[in-house]
Length: 348
Image 1: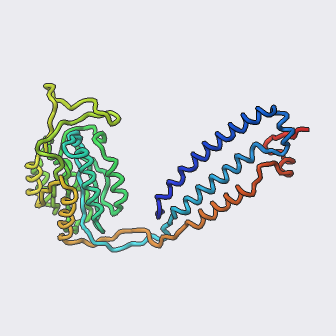
Image 2 (image 1 turned 120 degrees about the horizontal axis):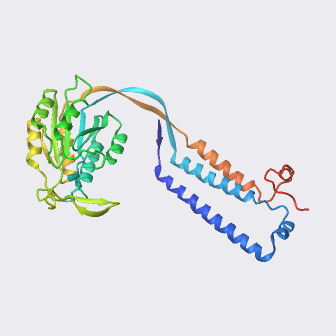
Image 3 (image 1 turned 180 degrees about the vertical axis):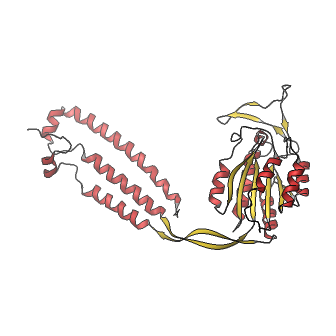
């Protein structure tokens, strides 16, 4: 397991392409200037010890020095020991609606981005709970199984979009049924499902039956509404540019609205609570308070410990390459000329 302490120093690597560009420009300028003074054979006679290869080699040493010094500043750490620790928490599954209606921009920047921000902020408030993620539209898809890796959860969360599921619609019942398979601990007393959606349900099945089954298995269902009662059209974009608005079979522009009634019913039947997601901070604080009030279940988790700094190796390599850059001369050395490794023939 590798940790990076100061990732901001990676920006120093942007210097490398700039140096390469300046070096190329300098070489072109030097060649043009030299041609004005003398032709190629004459220049070789005037500067017999000049090496065309050494300048590129020095540049390579210099760039490697910068790269390794940058890695030293970032300070990679390697976990040298995997140990089992005791943790207490709640098993939480987030079911995020990725149907086309979540593209509506009645809530900035749009409903899906708002939903992802809400889940991300909730994850930031967690300490030792286990989390899982489900994406659903016309069907439900397991995005991330129950885990304590919050970093991985955020990565999967940010990659969610409305194109990931070909079957469109909003099958909330399928999401609830899939969530029920996530909880792998039969003794877990607190199983929580957060459904983040605009409430539009186009599934053919009965949401009530799915909720009843979940409650029987000890799952509490909370719903988070994203969108507004006024609603808005669904923009269809390509490369970030709106090409058209979604229309129905009669050619009328579809206006999608937040259906709070559906979400409130699901939360009520699921022994949970409906939460308005309009104000992110307020919603997250309320959810944090709800989770803190729940009994915690002790479980085991493996994690890396005893992370050791590795910056010294990168700093040493960086200084070595800079040392080589300083002490390697531009001109040919006698032994290298004798070997003629680079087919640099001497001019008699």
